[in-house]
Image (cartoon, rainbow, N blue to C red; front, side):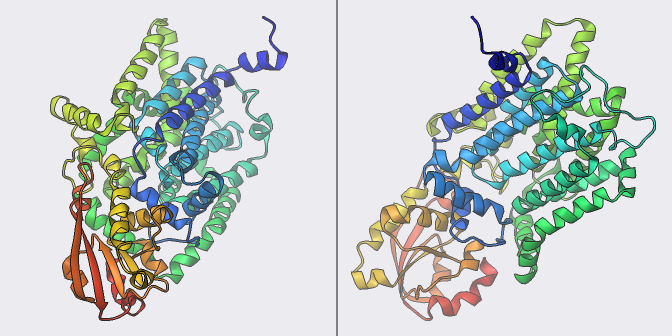
Length: 549
């Protein structure tokens, strides 16, 4: 069979393998992303898309822009909403393979690193949900690749004893822009600045990467780069990109620290440092543990990897920081692609040295089979009833209780991220039944009060389907958006305690209790109250509700 020369050239290079792995990752998510419903956080971010701003109480502004873009292009389908996370996941796989390529690895090393990324439950989950987490992982991985290019340039290595890695290849591949590798070092630093700036506009945890990056430079011969203007220019670029959000934070009285305080009170305080360490093995997949652990050893032990020791120090510095401040285990997840790349090369060269070629297909097979076995922890793959049986069985017989632990520290029926994907439309349908039973004059002045951003986001997402007014909530960023022109003369309250409502309404009637088998406890048995005869209008009482946001 005679192939076109261009196609034959493509298939003959390792880029074909990387493209296949990235496509496989993309198709996995395209196949599963329509399962279950929207996550509570997705509902909030979609609502942010209707309130574009330079900042929000929980996150920087870029996720709102992508929410607006998503709905403008693809509408409200689950496939459209979750398209960007799936695409970013496939790009993380591609970038991981390119890092292996730049380190001098061969096809097996690229395959091993790519498969390790694909099966990691934390990436499967992150690239399912429309959240800043997927973008965060992409920016960290892209930043690592640009740093590799900076070091390969040679100007990034300032020690006389250090040199760019010697391996099976000494230059970028034909499917990666060779002119980027050969471009002046200032371009690489500028790219790093842009990546950091965009990362900060996406998620403040980009500061962890910046901290690790600076620590890694200081602990290696790359520290001499600080004597040149380029790192400082990169910092300036990042600062300018981040400046609008910084100005917004200052103008709003630093709501980020208010949000951080509540996270510490309700979530971080329930975390255990031992769980953070164990969680690194679980969220990255236990079978992939040798790959990333050997990646750490690769950067610290192998002479050929000496120029890239910065990545080993970055990982240790960020891990130490998260341990000190009791961070969530998935905050460290974006550092693993570069460790997978280094570990894959370590394993490949060890097997070739021992001539244990037969182990290569065995390793890939073990990763794939074990990845399929644990995939329901990362993907909405099973019907929820089967997911419950699966998760409870593994918790009882394999000791896998950690994936079921909720933010409160207590175990649930299913992982909390999945529990947070159920029950939202049922709540809105119950509200709509009460709302449409009201006289027309009461409907015109009826406010839909929601106890948290998930409930408010659900009302706003399904409002057109159920012909409802916009939600009003004092929780999270909804407080910043206020009650609008809603007087709240009549109100339907979802999930707000009766004691709180009595402070503002004279007439309160319980209309329904909303239940669901798989939601978290705080979202189950929610009261729906019909409230009349307010003591003050919503705009009048709004400043008093600031402390509850």
